[in-house]
Length: 282
Image 1: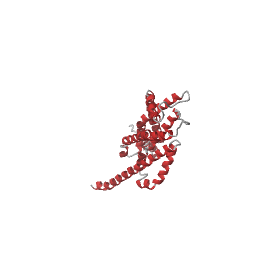
Image 2: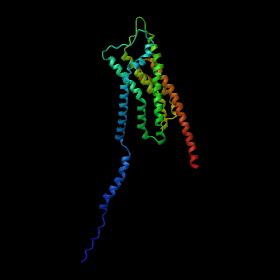
Image 3: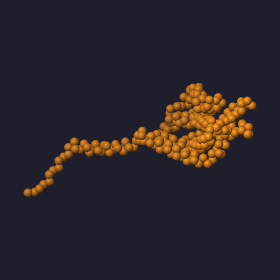
């Protein structure tokens, strides 16, 4: 009696369904993993901010060794208008330490600005097109140059004129006795305000590249932009008219410069759109 192997039973659709489901799940898993979620973006932003914080801390520690020289540079715009025997004072016992600490920290922030700006653009880069992503190093260089230009504008032009204007009101009855901590806070806030305000051309050009604004929009809303500029200047600067006027004037000039850059960008894009059909026909 021969033992023939039993014929295999055909698998039912119900049995085959889990296999197909597994294949579909395995095929969709890489697609889901390829798209980072909101938490992944937050983790990347956190990582880049930690890098900036570490570098700023290191550079601030290095600047601590040159705090006296840095303080001399910061106080020079006002000391030139004071009598030779006058200097800035501090009234609290820990003030000298806090002033040295703030100076070192401010120097670390300025020195790490290029790296931090690059981290910012690198975080935004994955959402851009390939040709736009290639411009990230250029944008970082421009942002750094504008940041330093704003700080230099405040230090070499706005500070001397502003300080001279207010010190001209001193007399024998009212002699200036300047506190170092208040002066340092004023200088830091003004330099930061000018440095950030000088980013306007880059921001407007970036928005124009995304198609959100155009030269016609900037021309049409010029009057409203000037009003907003004066409001922003009043908010960013301390409550004195001179620094507000300086910042507002600088922002108006930068707005007109941004208009020229956006118009040039729109013209170049229009020329590319005209040339593209000819390239396809060839």
